[in-house]
Amino acid sequence: MAPPQGQMRPGRQLAVLGFIFVVLYLLVFFSGGASGGWKDRLEPRLGLDLIGGTRLTLEATNTVDGKPPTSENLEEARQIIESRVNGYGVAEAEVVTEGNRNIVISLPGENRDLTDVGSAAELRFRKVLKATDGSGAAAAPPPSPSATPAPSGSAQPSGSASPKPSGSAKVSASPSAGGQGGMAPAPSASATPSASASAAAPSPSASAEPVPQSIEQQRQAVQQKVGAAAWTAASGLQAPADLATDPSLADKLKPFGTLTPQEVAVLPVEMQFNVPTITCAQLDKRPAASIKDEKQKAVACESGAKYLLDVAKVLGTDVKNASAQLDQTSSWVVSLNFTGKGQEKWTALTREAFNNEGQACDQTALGQDGKCRVAVVLDNEIVSSPEIQGVLTGDSQITGSFDSKSANALASQLRYGALPVTFVPQEQQNVTATLGSSHLQAGLLAAGIGMLLVIIYSFFYYRLLGSVIFLSLVLSALLVFGALVVLGRSIGFTLTLAGIAGMIVSLGVAADSFVIYFERLKDEIREGRSPRSAVPRAWVRARRTIISANAITLMSAVVLYIVSVGTVKGFAFALGLATVLDLVVVFLFRHPIMTMFARTRAFLSPRVSGLGRALPARSAESGAARNPRVKEA
Image 1 (cartoon, rainbow, N blue to C red):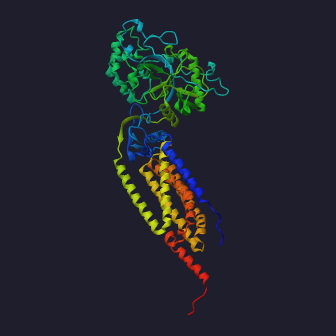
Image 2 (cartoon, one colour):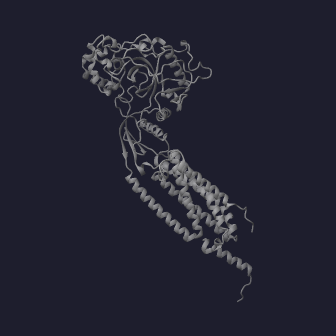
């Protein structure tokens, strides 16, 4: 009989396993995110079906006219929203469509902030053409001419009714190789300005603006509401109304102050800007997508100032990548990397703004250095409106009053793309996990009973070897539990009922590997080998089968994780994780402990070892070999 292939030292494998346990549970108790008492640090991150969570319903519309979106746009929006939510971590969020308008978002944990998830994230870069007061202070006739919001000839507007550019926002750029640098001026002859001098004095005619018929009908309803006199006075304005020179306009334009944000949204752009009784309080609450059309001018507010914005020359689709970063002053910014064509558009826009080509920017809209400003518009809001200090030929940054959360949220929205559909949040509510808790209790009870039966049968059939099965299952469970806690803190993995099911399935695969190993061991003993020499030989032959079985399970889990969504993805992740950890236990505990058992006297006893009839059969063969005499009849 050939000697064993090699002697192993089981103490080394067991020491490695012990080291893994120590490191894992040090992370459980002391890693980042671990807080509270010892019991709190041992709690994994549970899913929506186990602890409840937050559910938000979004209603989708294509435009201001309220048309329902197409099914293709709704599905595309669902996928983008799911990507945004998953950007927070592997939290097993549920993002599903409901009907032909609604998308329902469900996240584990109560009182979750989901306000930014459904925002359209339509990014537009627009030149600021004009600026005026939007606070409503100029809506009443001033007591003296000293408060007239007429702009001065300087770059800084004077008067209490004149807006002041935000000093906290700016645009910076990284100079590109071969370019002129972020702050270097460029010759104006190399760019064709798209905004002419006439753009600064737009026509007040509402009929010149192509709009859907339904919006035209809404506009007629607004005209009837404010009255013919008010509408005629507003249509005749060529610039923001100066109530100091014509106090009678205050009474004529007063009805516009009673309009709702929805009604203000359907007014012509010039009317929204020129009528002083239309304030930023109304403009800021306009429905989503009110200024979505990049081919039309727009009106938006910033810090109480009302801006007339040019058509959008650079869009969010021109941004290749966006990331939240800390700048040199330790302030949070959103860094933008443009596409090839997007960079060309951005350079041309900054050239127009820096040179004020065609004098498109009014004196009221210029910055402190007399240069045009470019407003960074996200949906209906101006994030910042920096003064352009030079032609920007490289990557740029959006700066403002950002913190880590808001900067990462904006970068995530820009990175995953704008939604093809605009949404209005309908309701956000906390949901309980009463049903999930009862299912969890029933599932854990069933799993406990099943495991108890497996352990009882293992000790009955394999006896001493049953203790190896019991200890292996306990160690696997401890490894899986510790990994769940650590992964919940690091990548946001959430344990759901589906994940628990995946782990229970993995236990079945682990039990199969025991049967393969132990039965292979019996076969080796039946072939005439001693129990001690049979253990390493049985391991070598059973190892291939065990690895193949676990590899197939692991590949199935990976494929299922890639092609699935929602809770099924959690099932696949848990199944794969438990399978990998079971292999760790097989190599670092099961085989070493069997090698140690093979050196004991109890292992040689059929009644104690659980090897059953294999040892008696071998003993009988050995006895026959020693006494070859045959009894004569």
